[in-house]
Image (cartoon, rainbow, N blue to C red; front, side, top):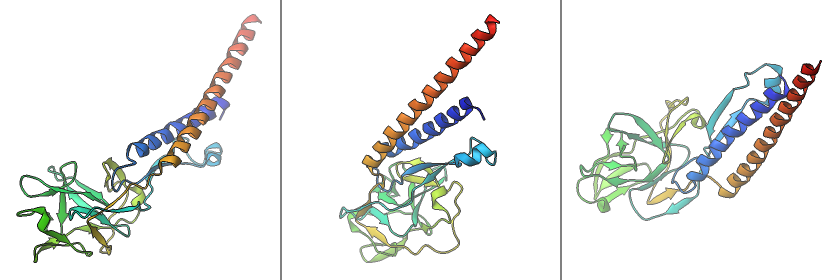
Length: 236
């Protein structure tokens, strides 16, 4: 691997990092959002030929964000690594650590994108006002004193491999739902904030930008040396 290839690899790595940083900064205020990170093959393995130079994977930082009480029953946060399940009108499943949900005209409880929050037996639907709803710590849903169902909570074997869809929602990606039932605490009237730290991301942004500029100078220097060599050969 020559200097030009090394510089090109470094610039591609920086572009991947800049993509994840910009995504994180755009979602710093999104409830339940998990920080995106790019994991690259160790540079020594690339040089040794043990791994391809393009080996890169985006993973999710699953650490919890800060909890913020709201007092609204359909604001939900889930502790201990579980996710609530949502289903779109086309039947596509997605998952979230909670969020701010609302009733639509049909009485379904939906997320910001219109996907329906799921109970164990299907869509979460309400009759009447959301002010009558109560969700306990096990995810059981009551309207007044009537139990109408239980939130479908799922857990993944490798949640860091889930794929972000935006707005704090994820699809399974390379992760699998485990066979073990999710044993987590549901916190109604609470939102989990993003786990992004904006100051940390700004530092990453500056560091990555400077490294990219340094790699650009390497490429320019290599190009100048090559141009001089060609010119010398032409004079022979």
